Length: 432
Image 1 (cartoon, rainbow, N blue to C red):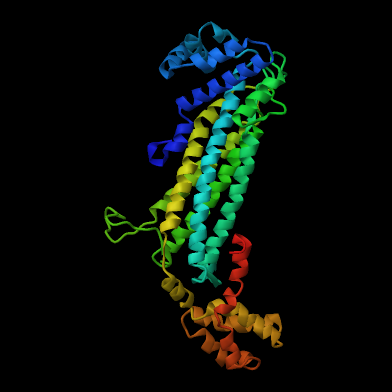
Image 2 (cartoon, rainbow, N blue to C red):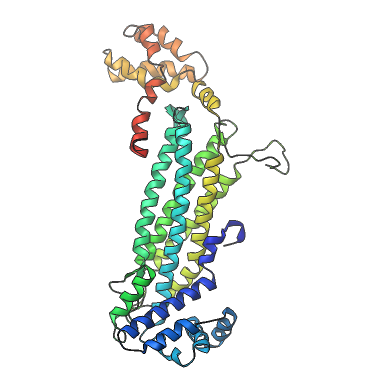
């Protein structure tokens, strides 16, 4: 991933330094387990830990000749360890190292993403309570529907990202498996105890059946969850983009002093951060299908999955980490305009209360069809600016025959639409 969309902690997970450190730990822990079984001398296992060393440049040099990254690493490691290096990698295959390492890296990535989600959730919760009573118009199909509050909007996103957090926790557990089972996963040349030992040291669980690789349905699920999280990011980003439109102006990204919105038009305040998030979400979701296609490998293994994972594993996790952090910043500094929300809500003269009038007419004795026609016949002129909705209702003999002026006016109370906000918040946030 390019530096523009990268943060150092996530990038560090995918560096050669971290990868080779994990490779070494897998090999060294496996040697400790072999020593416990009496298969290799305990002194040899100790020497491997004490003398270990490697150089990335030297590994690259060896790989250019061997065309095999694990062999290149083991060769360089042996140059430091000496004779005891003959006990390293006994009974193991390259995938034991590569797949177990990838599990550790994805677990590390998940931990960062979980922290990102926690920070986003905290920002959403704070802003939701801040605007719990900030009344605004709800929209369906982009058209005014009925009143809600901006806090309820944000509470909905909080609930969604809470679900995403649970999904990621489950995916983290699903991906955190260890395979140290040998050439075709039968433990023919290595005792299952070694796998159990290495797994315990790395915070993983043994893979129940590893052919020669950890089954890729695990990875498909992990990255599918990242795709869902990206979709949630886009949904919230899209909401903010719509609210920032000139015709709406109910909320907008923070526009810092000195910031410029356009090279041509000095008045512009563009939603560049949320537009950026929309694009990043597309990139993250785009990685999901290749990981799905990685599931179907030939027989006990092939390496068609490898290039996908080496390319998209780092880029996807780095991009999502950046996106979550950026979205947290957007929510934290989001500029909200309750007065503008109020003005937009009132802009059609109370049309947002049409359903309540409809229900009152049916309860007063009109059929639903007659009530619907009576309300719509007065709503359409108001929509066109040909009169005030409440006044038109009072003047309609079909309405005034069953509802008094006072009863009609009572249908236009905003509090009717916000009376259960506390219930919604209790469901989302629990007792406060």
